[in-house]
Length: 284
Image (cartoon, rainbow, N blue to C red; front, top):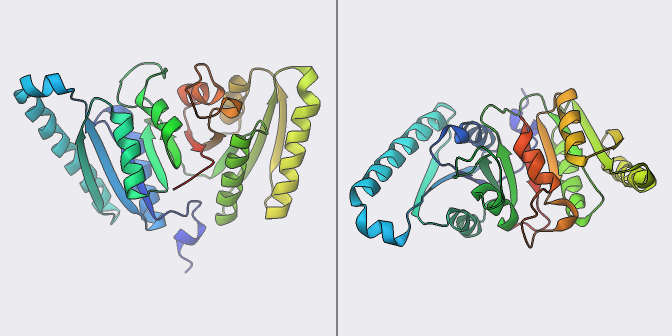
């Protein structure tokens, strides 16, 4: 019987699950364990206790409570992982800048993927500038998988959204690489959105270029060209096609040097119900 791992889309040696011990991390926890199992990858789990220096000297009882809850949370994750024969290495850090700590650990452990919940550690009802998840996406040295609470990657239906930028080309290569490793992939949709009719020729060329690349990789895709507001079209297509995973570049043409409020990637991550893989140009 053929090993299922041979049909899995990821090829990872290690991954870092960032959890905040809230319901927003539930989907990320389950998916990280699932990936670690089928990739036979090392799973690191980190929780950053948000404690500023002033609070640390005055709130000992509250800190002890936070640390106890953290230990219980890790015990829960360890039990879930044990059911899948996955071992975890837990990391607890104190900091008022959790995004920096997560990225620092990603560098230190040389992980291939960071897995996070959609709303980071802020608990905000909206994915906004300053959220931990957004900052990690910008600064991460590796790909970041953002998993909403109820999301599950199960039927292997990919939606790649590309705008032809350097950052999108990184996501194109990642999507093709994943598709090549998973012959059981059901559907691979490649989407490019023109903001106006006048941009259609450029958008069409983007898809044509990607189709040629896919042929070279031996991957069959279903191209989609649309006109409209990019994030709205991406969300619409993902829902219509019942996609498990959306793959994007890092903030499209705006790059990674700063967070771009209102960016396509940010809005897609905010409002989609499926997992989103943000592909980075440079990995560890």
